[in-house]
Amino acid sequence: MHLIEGHILRRVHGNAVLVPPPEKDIGFNGMIAVNHTGEFVCKMLSEETDTESLAAALAKEYEIEEDRAKADIEVFLSELRSLNMLEE
Image (cartoon, rainbow, N blue to C red; front, side, top):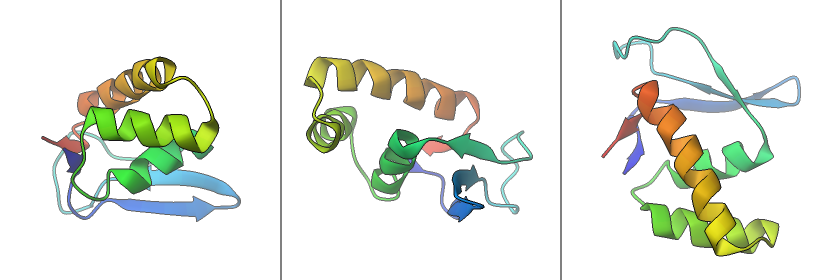
């Protein structure tokens, strides 16, 4: 899985935002503000990856248990799916 092609992940006034590509009709117009963890995951989702790899990287980066990281990843991915921001 990965973020839809052409997405934009930028910092605006110190905050990370994820913007869908304007040429894609995904049913969502706007920006998604993400925290540091969300930004980390979005950067990983810029390339093809899977849930297990995301959870392992998140656990290592933030020094948390991999099970907790996986649960958090699933919630975040669910949100991205609901906004049609993922290609699987």
